[in-house]
Every structure is written in structure tokens, then in C-alpha cells.
Length: 295
Image 1 (cartoon, rainbow, N blue to C red):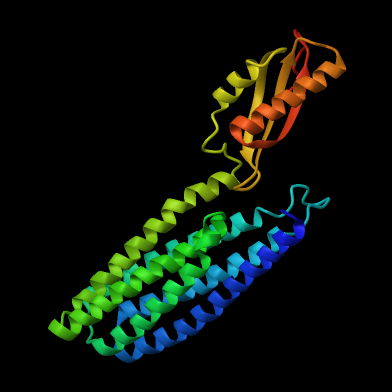
Image 2: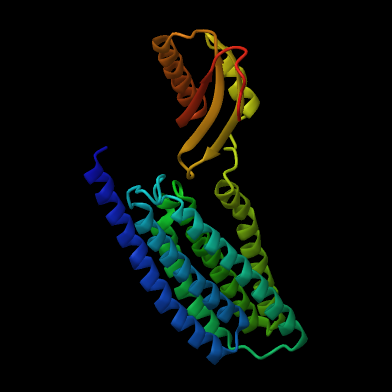
């Protein structure tokens, strides 16, 4: 695929994210107004979560633009990790929102308030349509980017929250069960916290240069030592440059001192790393038998 085609796809994706940001900001304004008029905490909770969606999408969009910058002398690996930083910000925000909603819902159990159910149902139904449309806009991107996936989870959980709000409004209209508003707010908060805490470890793992989940260091050593002329492998480090690129550095002891043969061995090692472990970037320190490793 050409660079121009990648650039075109990137611009098209950015436009989808931009539309999603604008729509979510407008929806937040409507939901806050409706929540204040109706007295519904769950509707205001949904609005705050929706504002988080807009911010999450905006951060994701900004990070995608930065990530496409080419490598330079200051950032020799490029700027791809900008998307991981954006994901970390969005997931942390998701958790903070979840904790805030939990506290507010528990307080509403202590001091219940009258709620106008029709306003809740109508605005929540509109929110459901918007959140579902936004989730559809970002779904395809979320499959290949943890940055967009974090923003997508904001929207998906908000769509589910809108369903919960509709249920709360309906029960209030039928039975005057005002406590349902606080209960469903707790359910929304619980789901938000679950999503935040479930995705956060993966993001932190990559930022901490953790070994990719599918790679076993012991297996890497075993596979490389099975190659002809390779006597042993040590000081192996494997990490993720970003969520799509893996890197390795290792010291390799070889039996052959011939420089041309060593280059062939290194090429075989790189091919094997790419084929079996999806490691495309490798730095190999070649040593001879009985040589002293200085590192």
C-alpha cells in the first residue's frame, strides 16, 4: 500500500473522528440542560460521560495527527507512542468519571429527588442514537488502535448508559421508582470502571517497554539456538515500540568467525524472528566462543 493511500485513509479517519467530536459536544449540552430541568442524576451522569467521550475522541484525533510525524534526531523511533499516551489519558479519565458517578449515585440514595421521566426518556433516546452512530464511526479504527479503542469504549459504554437511562425514566413514569435513577447510575459507573481498569494494564505495559504478550523470551532463545552456527543466545530484551511494532536486542554467540558467514547468520536470525514472533526490528551483538561478554 502506497504512502499516499495511507495518508488518504488517515485523513478520512480523522474526518470521522472530527464529526464524532462535534456531535458529542452538542449532545452533552442538550443532556445537561435536560438533566437540570428534569432533576435526573442519571441523565446528567450520562452527559458527563458523553463530555468525556468528546474529550476522548478529541485527544485520540490529536494523538493520531502527532503519531504520523516522521522520526527525527530527537525522536529516533518516531511519534507513534503519542497514541499510547492518549489512550492512557482517556482511560484514566474514564476511571475518574466512574468514581465520581459512584459517589454521586450513593449520595442520591441518601437524598432522593423528584425526576420528570418524560424529559429523561426523550433526551436519553436521542443520546442513544448519537452514541450508537459515533460508536459505528469509530469501530473500524478501534480494531487496530488502542488509542481509538479507548475512545470507542467511552462511546460504547455511553450508548449502554443511554439504554439504562431510558429504562430508569420509564420506570419512574410507570411506578415513580425514583431510586432506580441512582441504581442505574451505579450500574453505569461500574461498567465505566470495568472498561477503564481492563484496558489500562495493556497500555501501561507497552509504555513500560514490556514484552509482547505473544512472545516468550525462553522460546525466542530456544528457537535462535536451534539455528545452524548459533551456539548460545543471552542478554535478550524484547519490547513493543508501539502496539504494532516489536523490537529485540540480543547477544548471539556464533561458531564461525568469517564476516560474510556472520552476516548470513544474522539474516537467518532476523527472518526467523519475523516469521515466528513478528519481530521486525532487531539489534544483534555477535560474539565468538569463549569471548568475554562486557555487558
